[in-house]
Length: 352
Image (cartoon, rainbow, N blue to C red; front, side, top):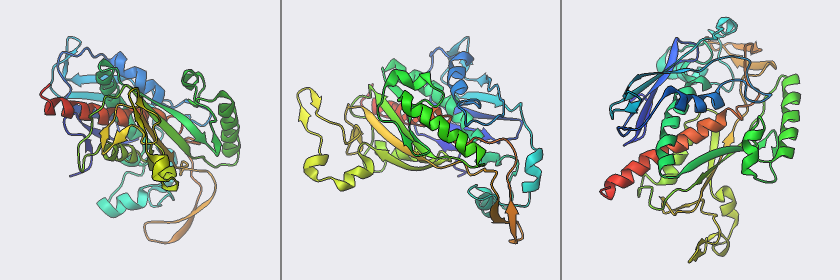
């Protein structure tokens, strides 16, 4: 019940709201004797916090994590790890006018319908600020995966209709938009400037590449690897679709085109995206997510209030123009959490 926990063997529970005192996550299932310090988590939190790219919100949060439990003398104990990140730069004033109004594109209406009450300050639990707990837990998952030489990276494939024409991995962290194509990144920045001046927002596509994933991860029939990856990625508020490998393009192929030939050296191509029958094949995992435009825009919109009366609304406050690139590390975190969980499940199955 509640939908705030994720995973089976490696399980997390996030908590907190956008304008509450703090947010955090409890991690259960982390193995003991693993070196873990706050600095290990800060590296990932710094990639998610505001100030990433020209389309970012001006909200300033240090996002410093406090380890409350599960670590003793710098090493995990095998007991639940509790992580806390305090909210420091809160400005709830602009949201007071939204107390009785449902914002278009937000979860205001549906939270009210479900609970009969909602936190109108910044969206409360439905805010993208909730993902800070996921990224903190994902940092721990990434450390587990790194011991198995599994690397997860997400990059901006498309933003505002501009698509990267090449993927140069070293370029990803060289520009604010984490785009693997420097030329495309410049055009994306131009689109962000245009959208901000117009009071509008932009959507895009994030691609996630996993290298070093061993064959055998994933469970038939309902816990297929791609099913759990899709659930994890779709649980991110701004994500509206997930593709694996060739994705929807596979619907336009023939079997002779879509099948990936096996050779003594491995797969000749990878339209399957590294997963067959719900189980990893040993090839790179390749996924893409469609990210919707930020619904908080300064243009006038039509909506209703709690009395179902029509009203016009201009949203004030501090908002991103696009969820990209701050959503990229969130995507990495969710993929890392799924892979860590399935890695432990596979080890248990094989008696390792």
